[in-house]
Image (cartoon, one colour):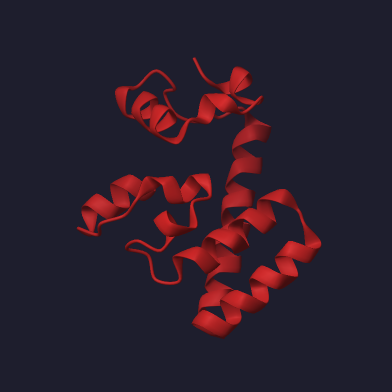
Length: 118
């Protein structure tokens, strides 16, 4: 989604940002590193990291961006849980775009990849 939205808005990004590279997160996305750390802390359910990243995002971007980021994260969690619960398939894991993104990000290195990659 990030790649397609960046193409739609003609914004240059580095997809490696979603793999945790801070230098990549800073490219083309306002407050990218702070947003990346916030998202990672949420995904890892790391309370200490979440407190630090929330404070850093608030300091760098202000309360409106922090609230928006939290809302977007909550919405993604909701959508994923609903889709999982009712059995909606994610994406065509065999598509060329999907394969390209998985290779570019090195997603096969994660143990959970064996459950989701075709």
